[in-house]
Length: 142
Image 1 (cartoon, rainbow, N blue to C red):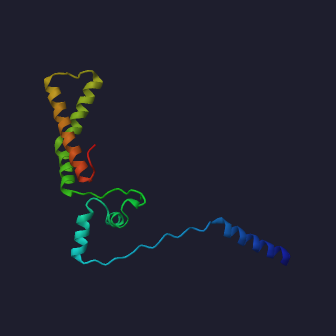
Image 2: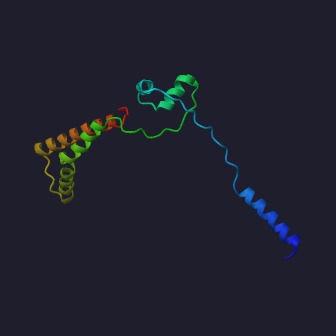
């Protein structure tokens, strides 16, 4: 290989390496703010269900706030979530529906007042669980 060819290969390699990754625009660095425990507590209270960043942004810029990607909210109420999990464990919903489904599949499903009452009770339990889940996750009911 000649020196000329080697030099051209080196230049070609450098050019290819430079073009393989476009320059990534850098984001702005975060702003840090020191608060006392009391100030932070008030800020969290005033923010409500919003993140602290979203709350500060809305206070500073009002209606001119650019929309942000929405993240999943953390659990708002751990006690409600615990009640939901306990209700699932104690309700017997899954075995009840499994028995109903099996009876429907085999053609032995008896429709009468007892089954109707069981289905209504199961629906009421599911509605209560739904209500607690919505509350625990900090969502608003439809």
